[in-house]
Image (cartoon, rainbow, N blue to C red; front, side, top):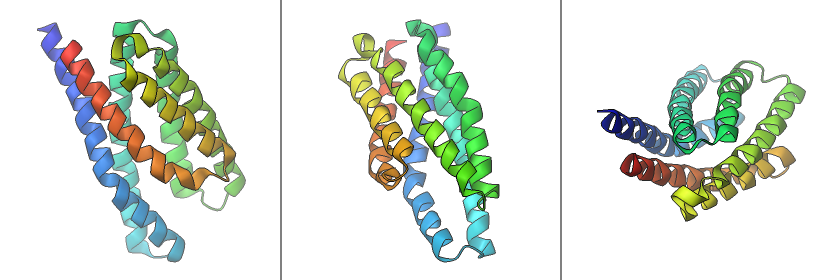
Length: 179
């Protein structure tokens, strides 16, 4: 019974990552519209809806990483997951409701980037169990984190984030097979 439950936990995390990948382009387009029409209430409502869905999906994905960290006894990954949870929620709140405070937003972007770099290094430690997928995923998180932290290269995360999400999906399906 326990093995079957674990399989479903990882599949749910994989499905959450799939939905995130599907919502990636609409979220990006809404972001463009927000820049062009910052006071449009309809676009603002879509931004809030997509952001809340994104946070919920992100929490499900992080839960999958927490389960992997338990099975692999990767304490560093587990700690990084528990750091990511409040960071995800706080950064979303700041992005949605404190747009005028660019300094605070930039500080959170840099912090998020550093956390992604550390998270990527924790994922690389899964290479022994998950092979090249874990290595590639860890490297992508490190690249994303570097782009976030630099702020000037932030726009490049559009190209790397989708790849990272696809690698997450593969990792979670591999975990579902393994456990």
